[in-house]
Image 1 (cartoon, rainbow, N blue to C red):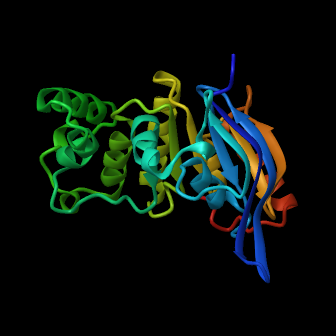
Image 2 (image 1 turned 90 degrees about the vertical axis):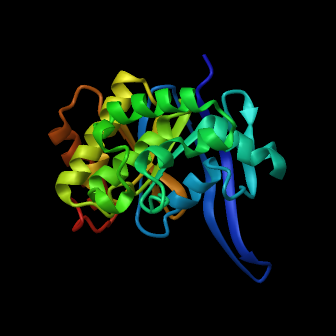
Image 3 (image 1 turned 45 degrees about the vertical axis):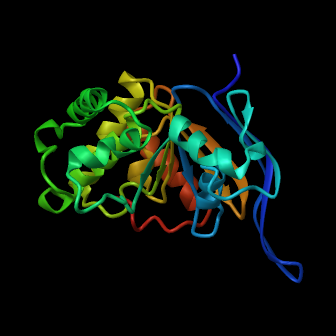
Length: 255
């Protein structure tokens, strides 16, 4: 079987001819369907650049990215929006919820824009919200619920169209410890119950310990890779911490 996502020897440069910064250098790895992959690294290591490349937000300078058998680096500008809508789900630290829309309307907005029938949207919204424990909050506005509940709303929005890949960028960064743990348990449920494939960028060791596999970036290159396997989350946490320490990273933000 082909992997769900294949990253093949990608480079990313920023700047002008006389002042070039290489953000990614010959990065290659694969993500199998059902993986829960964490990407870690210090600020400036290239982790968000990598995520944005996979999200087709920022094109690579060289190399190829395949989702299934589709080379997404070959997509035309007018194809990108449809590709993201049909294949990707996004959960970012900045939730981008619309304040004047209810949670129900926020979750179903992408489907409404695609012209999906209201009855079907309602059914899908109810199902996604129920899975994430916010089914009784759908008529409320974002300002009327907690930060953790808003983040769950963002997760429901991300999974409503059953994306092939969920991309999360520091999803717990703005949450307190309890809300962060609840969100990560939701991710775990999505991964284990729905077999959702998740790629999550984080600097936080506690957050990363929920993943099944971690790639560490340093200076735009893959520094190390570890897998959880049969380890307990506590053991995996310590293993991640050891690698971060070896890299000279600041782990003071670990929850």
